[in-house]
Image (cartoon, rainbow, N blue to C red; front, top):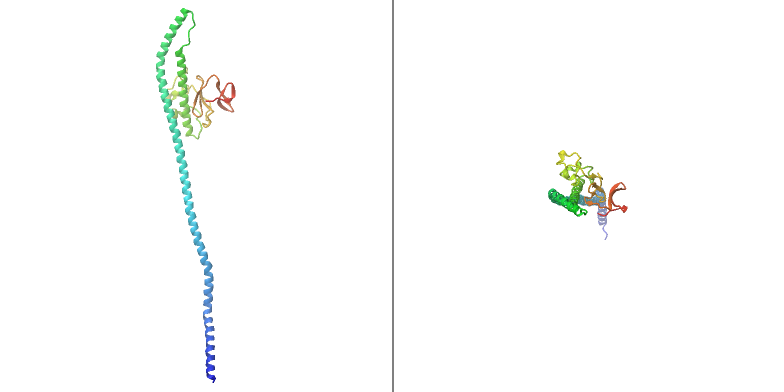
Length: 283
């Protein structure tokens, strides 16, 4: 039998459940909606935070790389400076060796020059005897070999002076932006003594003992290219008009012969061949 009371009880239970569910949604719905909205906002924020952290790591990596690059640049700059210093030291050493060689040659020439008075006296005596014998025999006298030897010694001494002048000029130019000096007094520290400015064949001048008494009157050599570029080896920097010797801008020295001379070509003094004025002479 169907009990009406039981039907009423079942209906109340069902209605109570529906009311309880609706009541729960009404109570918790706003909170759940807020949580959903909060979660929806946190997801992109979290992704954004992770991207920011990744960018920071990349930025830190780039900073380290930039610091390493700056250090490499500094190391490279220091390496270039050291390389330039080594090259300059090598040049200075070579120039010093050349200077020592020239000083040795000068000492040898001075020793020969000290013997010249005795040789000259002996030569004059022998020449007088030959002249007397030739006069008696009616023949011409021969050329004095001692005079020729003296002339050769004077030219060698002159070449030695020019080499020292050229070397001193190059040393001065190394410290002054690769520009040769404009006069002899300017490079007095590199020349050390003004005695080398007087050619041994120049009997009209007296050597200056030191720079304190130097006034320019003892100079035998002509400075043809003051302020020249030492990197142009064809430029004639200094010349001896007595011995016809020249010193080039690269520090080398030449004894000019009958087939060569110094002329101004394109505004620069250069050594040329007489038979071909436009063609520079080979050292």
